[in-house]
Image (cartoon, rainbow, N blue to C red; front, side, top):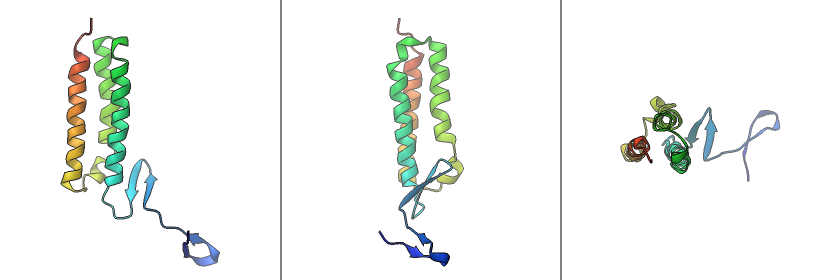
Length: 110
């Protein structure tokens, strides 16, 4: 692939998406890549909690559900909240799933 020739013979390459300090930046600053990244990360954590739901008491399940998923939504939300509303609504749906999981994990399985 070709890049832009900068001073001193350094080539600068264009990339469509880059991760910087945990924020996925795309070349148009739509934050679509970051929203997909957040959804995927939360989904993995929700699946792990669901598989281990019988291993922990209810109190610990609630604590882990909040500790493992809410920070993913909150980190840098001030920046990516500028994304289009339709993409942000996907995170709302993911958050609804988190709340459903929270109520599901709160029910004793015994």
